Length: 114
Length: 109
Picture 1 (spheres, rainbow over the protein chains, first blue to last red):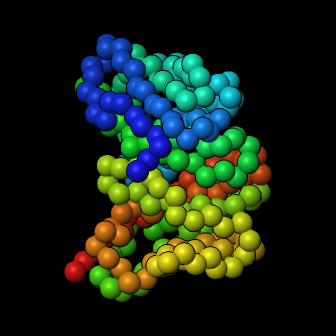
Picture 2: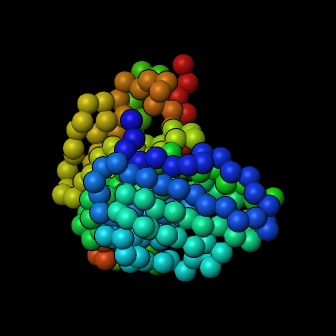
């Protein structure tokens, strides 16, 4: 059983749509992450939040906008996406950022952009 | 640049042993993780190595050689449920987690 949940599990959207992905962690962790996982490619770190503050943005296009209202919740707002943005989007959390902490992952949102 | 290399796919037989290798070139080293990911599911933590040697945990063992930039995951007494992707990830000197593309392991009866 995972302590990190994500909704929705599947999302199909057009390029002009606006949607949001939600992540919630029930582990009492302080750091949360968004990753993009494409087939046969390494996980790509998108954003990192530590104690609700964004600490990393790995050159992610502005059509992806993260939001972290508190240490337990993380959102990824999507708008005017491109077909190449279709991927599995994974949320993860860890106790803190900056230590070799184990990251715990949610099940992901499978995003398809038409 | 930083790089993690793993075989793309491996096939093994139920009940057998399989070794999944991972080689890395990173700026510094603060540990290496192995994760298991079943299709359509979350990656789940398997092991963490920071010192050289073998760490055993039930049917799974993980080995690290820092001087060689090399690790392997050893799976014994393979079961059908072990069919999954296995992800290798290294923590560099900036505590960034560098991920491999994963090895898809197919178990045949």
